[in-house]
Image (cartoon, rainbow, N blue to C red; front, side, top):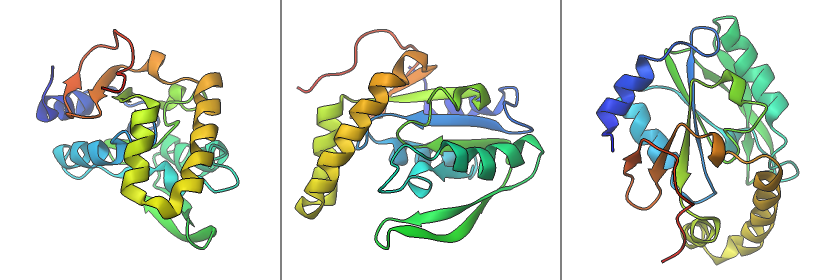
Length: 195
């Protein structure tokens, strides 16, 4: 087991993976704790930028964000430039203001599918939030409330289909327990199941 300070130091010592940036993905099921963990790690890294894939995904294309990520983030980073992309507004169902993200020494990419096949070549490290899908889904639904139950049902189907064809967990460099937040340096064992 590693503590967050040690992990941040290890991330900062990695060789750059895209231009001058060490791009670190935090992936896992919706509701598994990715955003919380990425925020903690960003603070431990001294304020590292975080790209949230929820800003690039849409209702119509929950996993159709690869080209937006490539054009708005990966290609500029490869040139040593800041990235920029319009942020999707989940209430208005359209893209809104553009967000800039600096080509910092470490940038976190957080969201379901962050470790997908098309992105992995640009990653310095891949972190998997270890929490099974049904438990993570129940947690997300509890967080968002019954008004979003239909959304969560549709999202869960899309997520299962995504991970069935493009799994992330087998490629993770390390895991984080989605319940306790403990950092695990191995990827051995089966996904945690509901208790």
